[in-house]
Length: 343
Image (spheres, rainbow, N blue to C red):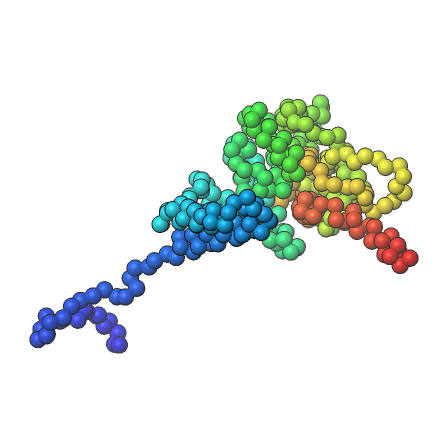
């Protein structure tokens, strides 16, 4: 039709014969769900009754009584199924939880300090981009968690930047973190104080004191710096240390029992599991943080782009360690298994 054509309804006022206006057929849709669910339930009840009958459950009843039971079950199912009513057990916030389950998300604890929380969000965003570009893992946007109310079990690793200026977590929040760690999750505590610890005379920063106060209410295992033969050193990249914005603080994990029967120099420990806790003072988020253009927000100390690259690689190794567990430790047994199969 020509441009700017105006569509108008048919003017039937001048017709010489009577007419009737009707709406389009199919304007009303009917849902078959109630009928189909009712039919499925009836068939299920009938099938269950037949199985019970074949097993002799109705042996003490006469045939008319058994038939009456089947009819009663079918009628009861029809009466119990309402026409168009459905149970709705959804809760507020369920749609947000479902969106968070579509992908793996890196999570961080919201401390209440604007600068710290922004740096955590931008840091995990930078690690998310690095994981997407360098690995097959494509996480979704980082998630900030309120540990007093948010569901924690959706996240395999939670980054917690420790700040002495932030409010002390409540006992209920500490209990939720403890339950999260007991159920298989891992919390990465980052005191971000390696530089200040080196410059202070006491060697203990306010952030470290706050971490000690938090850990006092947690049931944590014995800790040790990451050994050179640990899976964390080879879960994706080959690493000898785990720097962040600073370099010098060890990455503490759960201490593994010393097995004297194992030969020295093994590439990985056979019993190495996933540690429920990690502690560092190297400020991982400060090294990972990027702006909207992908440029670093903070310099490393000392300024060294190779140190930033190693910080990103440390984050990749930690994530792969969390998602795959001790599969690298299992791989060291492959030569022995192949040799045994050959025999």
